[in-house]
Image 1 (tube, rainbow, N blue to C red):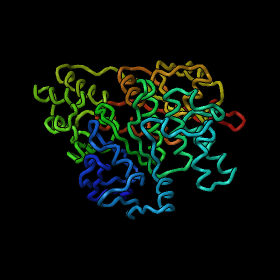
Image 2 (cartoon, helix red, strand yellow):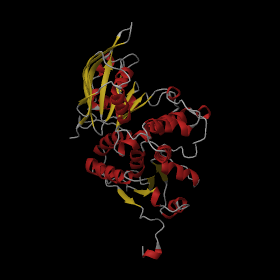
Image 3 (cartoon, one colour):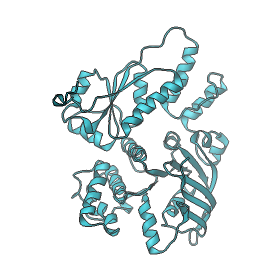
Image 4 (cartoon, rainbow, N blue to C red):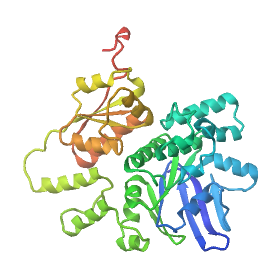
Length: 400
């Protein structure tokens, strides 16, 4: 089990001349976790997050990073804010420089990086969030989603261990929200611990490894999402609603149509339950499944994606990661799926379609692992293949 990286012990905080926002709260975050603090407005979510990297100091209790209490002298705060990066709900509160480059460079410059180190950090961060070429752009000319990405890049440029997001999808349209959550998933796959606050149960339920339910500055429940949202009375007490997939599943169980086994967290999980009900009332063999192919964008020669679509008879395209999205755009290929890509691709594969997922790095292995996990859980055999890299094969090296 991963070690604890952040911990709150009996933390209290009262705003000057105001109410007590956090009331003797204790919890921990393990390295590599995705944790959602969920509650209505005024629950204390933002206050708790601001204490995680020293922007607020508790009136009593302790915050610990890597088992060491956070200190509040200048040097200690500078280090904790490098290790625990904070992205505000409103990016306009975070973006302060006249150009994108200067804003993303602000952290590395203040950490004493050399000029060359600053350039590398900024270039890497902007590439990661898909904003290469935006260096000279004034932030006020950017869209809300682009501003959010600049704010994230400014944090990534300091290479923190933990990323904290206060309401990461607020003020964004549905497409922008999906892009940001997909970026958070990519960051997590690359080793970052992610903590978010939200009042959106439909966002937190499928995303989080663990949920902390808050109300009036106190923790009501702390557990995996299926348990944290599984008690309707407790969820109502938190002034929230049960996630729709979980509510639907509970209704199926009450009607004797589904067994109380693994609760669905995604549409794919729910389809498996419905298919199980259907198979129980039918005879005959299920329809043949399709193939899910995965390609590492960094191993594909420029201009070959359309050739792959044609050669392999692809009927749908999913894309994961900023580099992959940029590549599809430059080659004039429009993806069918940009969020929850693996599950959506499995759903299409279940009905015989041939799907291509374009991604990069460690995400290739994650796709294969998820398909294998799905086969073990359901007994439904899907084919998953990687496109042989490099593509097209290098004949000079004897590739077949």
